[in-house]
Image 1 (cartoon, rainbow, N blue to C red):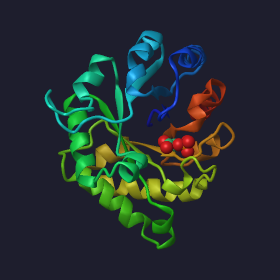
Image 2: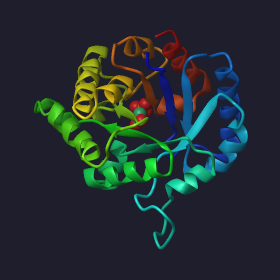
Image 3: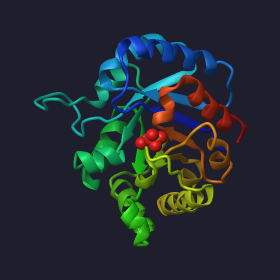
Image 4: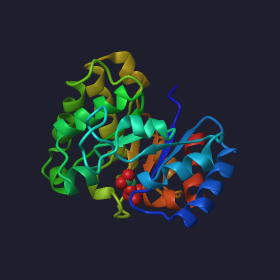
Length: 251
Ligand code: PGA
């Protein structure tokens, strides 16, 4: 039995004043939820505040990105895995489609980031997903395989890592993949990972992301290979986010 994970990806949203109420409400609501791992991934600059607000709570936190280089040095503007650990992060999102498409992150770079994250003892949340034109061209599985294999080829095992399937056409668009569409790809991901290790694949948590809301979370989480969600817009509203966490609890 895989323990579900619901992780909020705040993206470039938030303010010190506004975060306070959101974090307090999420931490309070999380106390009533058992059997689900809950995390929030705020912008880097808020990590110290988030650590202060969530330390000792049931809610973990993480970064939205990290530098592929380990150690310190001349990498202007970058944040290392060790720095994220320094602020108590447990997770880090790797290879989000916005990083891949807006900032040109290649599969190879994503793989290096994955290795850097595990070296820093962070749990990577590796994002994979196809563009609308790729789905329409029937290349969804080929795209996902390419994205996954780049990482699988770079490591001995995925270990405790998490994979998030986020069809790019469903992110922030209000257009969610149907539970069946999502399940099909989640099943494919698990089979692909199983080539490298059956036990790791069986234990691997595969999150769905893309317009998840309180109202559609339960039907997605009810699918056999959907083990929680990576939540963008809906993670910025405490009650909506908690509703999604509760849906994972009862899945
Ligand atoms: P969304 O974003 O929930 O706002 O669609 C999900 C994501 O990009 O992780």
